[in-house]
Length: 290
Image 1 (tube, helix red, strand yellow):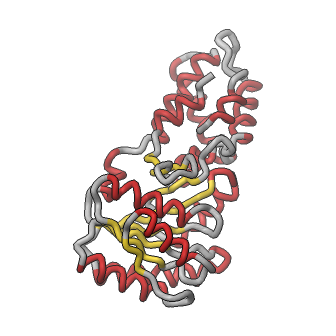
Image 2 (spheres, rainbow, N blue to C red):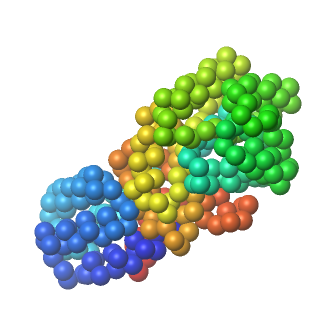
């Protein structure tokens, strides 16, 4: 998953090399090439330098251990972050067109159904052409109900109907496919606000989760999307889609280090079972696997 990052770090960490300023400049360049944002690079490198000074070490092999430990601590996702998988919960999923949002929802429904959960989908992305049909198709594929209305319907009305079905059928999880039109942030905020008010009114006792889907192959563009969605909604976690061999992988670090948003799931392929919980230990091990 982080193979590109691993390849460009390969020549930096040599057991007998001194970690001088030239080394840190090369480390910064390697991280930026791997889609780690500049602010995150500076934060990470400053922290690593401080820890190296504190420990009195200056060889790159020692710096590698410090960097590895720092990244693992930064990227770790506790089991508590997945409480919504165990509780009766409402999951709102946001993301711009083309990032794999609807596909990720279908895979998440499959993931939860495999855990024995009764899942219902709500097709509340009503203004994107084909979005409703795509989610209905995923519902059929996974074997879960998908509540929907016609294209152009009020998204909040779809959510209201889905909540009634959710309660009537005593389901465990409702996953709501919501809009992601960031070019008109004011309308998006109003739409999400209306949906959230209906959920608050109809299911105040429920566990709430808001996941933003980002395309791991788009680098800094995805970071910009994450920032904007965080500004206009209460995002609780990230789904990184298309996190395969074409993704550089460093963006996952920036999302956590710079925005404080945990990466909770990654999509690593086209198959229905290819959405998995984010494994921070494996991610960091992959970075240094050379």
